[in-house]
Length: 516
Ligand SMILES: [Zn+2]
Image (cartoon, rainbow, N blue to C red; front, side):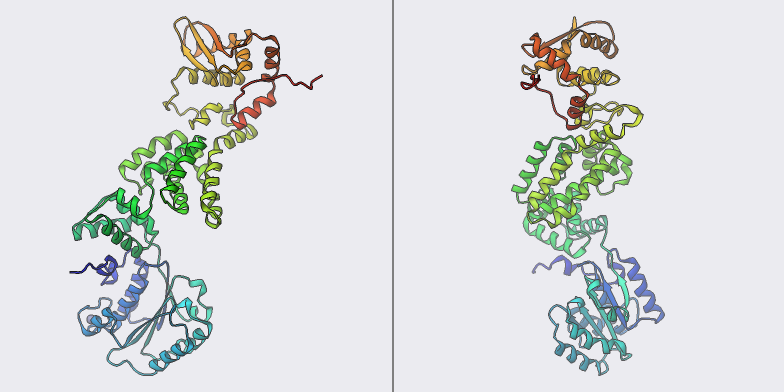
């Protein structure tokens, strides 16, 4: 037995079987049941959502030996001939290939005569928007004064290209894109019926890639079965469809949200090198961000994730919070036309990713300009690691550096930022701050008597008990000139503002050679 493609094997035989088009189906059924069918219909909508199938069912419904009926029998000669395309009374023409006026004239000639056997001559014109203007004009006559035995069904994926003169003479029915979860569950149903293995997450990925088109989903599933025989899982989907694994996209979003641009770009490059499509990657990042917003708001809102995926995304969602995620989703969505229309999509995607990675800095700038809620500016370090102030229990909140800095951010931001650039350890006799060898100015600043006093107090508040503070590293910490310049520089509010806005680090402070 030869393999029959799924779209054909599973073509709906009844109106109810057309997936996700309940409103259209109801309208047609009512018209058939009450005998109020129009003489011309225009079915518009995405490819592969059931327009042609509905048109053929309509032809059967009006010509069935047991009709007209909303439930054509499917067995009589009329029904069978319409199904296999041999009916003389149900004519299908393709607007894309029959654009000549002569052919439309032939059609008009045909329409002058009564149907040979059936009640109606049904003319189905697929992709009607492709017909030439002259062909449209020739058609118009037959639509304006149709013989009572003619039923027109026009189908189009681009309704806006159909002339108004045609539109105004048709009853218009719009076919909707089919929801991902409905396509996925249809795929699982088919797998169950046909006896092959289909992972639920793979069904989801296929349905998403089909973007609302049932036919596209079925032909993708055909491809996957040809690839993986009787087992269609995430690996097969990734290999055949080029859909990146959810895990990978979450890793990318996590990196960008935390401002780790290099890590984000390396994930992107890996995926692009593996042959993933830039536009698809863009969409998947948007999808994960959107799912994360849903998870942060209310986990029950997000229905498109499997349990595993939700388990992976939920902690990230909670850590970043609704506000930050919503802004990030907005930033990402703004890049859509840029990525879509770019000559070099891969480059546009990288730029979009870099912009998103600047998000923590943008947020800091906003907070400095407009003020943070409650009058305090959340520490740069917290934003940098994507943590939300006050979101207790977040990873890393318990290390001595974070605890000490958290106390200092209330009132001594410069000292807090110095602490964040050091390694802090809590030793039995003292609280120790270690700076990198080059960070002379910072070391000098932290080691000054005023700073040490502040650090001692903060240490007591953060860890309880009084203990001394020791500042290490920075080598020439005692060098008088560096010390003086460093103090002055670090006390400069402009420098501090720039550092926090831009997320930089003060490596060294040098005297200005031109200063008088
Ligand atoms: Zn029939």
